[in-house]
Amino acid sequence: MIRKVSLLMVGALLGAAVAVTLSPTRIVFGSSANAAASDTYRQLQLFGDVFERVRSDYVEVPEDTKLVESAINGMLTALDPHSSYMSPKSFRDMQVQTRGEFGGLGIEVTMEDGVVKVVAPIDGTPAHKAGILANDLITHLDGEQVRGLTLAQAVEKMRGPVNTDLTLTVIRKGASEPLKITITRDIIRIRSVRNRIEDDDTGYIRITQFNEQTFDGLREAVDEITEKVGEDKLKGFVIDLRNNPGGLLDQAIAVSDSFLDRGEIVSTRGRNAEETRRYNARSGDLAKGKPVIVLINGGSASASEIVAGALQDHRRATVLGTRSFGKGSVQTIIPLGSNGAIRLTTARYYTPAGRSIQAKGIDPDIEILQEVPDELKGRTETKGEAGLRGHLTSEEGEDKEAVAASQAYVPPDPKDDAQLSYALELLRGLQQNSAFPPDPNAGIPN
Image (cartoon, rainbow, N blue to C red; front, side, top):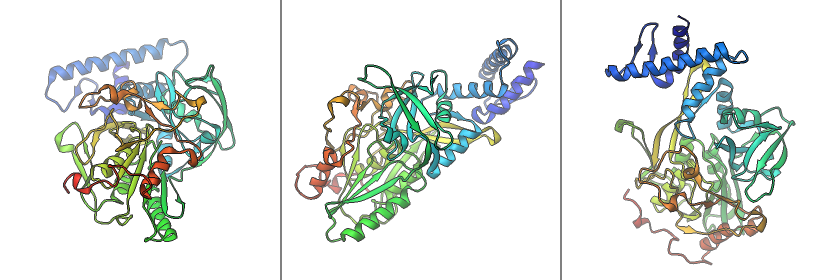
């Protein structure tokens, strides 16, 4: 009888995730495949057996809630690197982050081979100022091993009260021994859009991530630049999406729509054909037809790739830099009431021309490599999504180019930024390239 109660408890927690209803005597599935239902029941019975054995025989009395949460998270993380379980606290933290303000260090991370891997530090945050780099591997937090923790657990440990210190043990490619970097936690206010005027005639707009403030920030930046420079004098805009790890889908659509008058922006396709959704642009171009160059690199992922792919396919912008990260999947947040939520990969997204960039990335129209300082050579490249264990494979297959490393380095001093310099010279007519300006007639039909 104890086992049946345990299965009921697990079923209540897992029900929203696996669409299974448990009763004391049988398991009821939506499918009429009795054999499949019976096999699934045996597997759940196996889980119940293991669960009870751990509860009764483990060397210390375990906490039931943690056991079940760990089981759920194990199921989800086994699917792909981006699916996971969020405890109620983690779910609240995620909601705060998407609003653009949270407490912590200021790094975007993923889990790889049991340790935390840095996707990119967020501009202007304590992690960025402390010198954390993309591709750094974090093995210890205040001396405690990361191995054995889930990504959500590691992130929770990195967050904490403002003005408290956290020491990271970092393995960096090329370094002879692990680095110990102490960072003081702060309120991370994500100003996702920054702008400046280059040489009195060109607008530079940097989007660091896609949160709820991104579109409003972009609109304000375009209006401010246009007003200060003057529409007649303005040469165009550089939209910098380098090392932007992504964020909210609706914000990526809104940013793309800002520069398009019509046509498809992106489509998402789930397991079933009826789940396909298409998002189209509305009339109105914030830049009023001014030339646009989009900068990407190996750290540009997800929402960044939606924007770059849409503007590239419609020939509205020239994409410059190095191949992007290649995260072409959509995660849906599914609340579980008081039990938190799950982040589940539910669809792949496709550019307007029908390209899935999952584990492939966006190839720039113009490839420009940065000059990397000697002390960082060999440490500024990433294999992107194709390098993550358990990633969804590309539907078109993955060739050697797709899994080759892509540069993700941006010099701290704009004067040393070869990609930005080339973009500005193109906009001012000091450089010539067949990819700029793009031919709108060569894009997809609208």
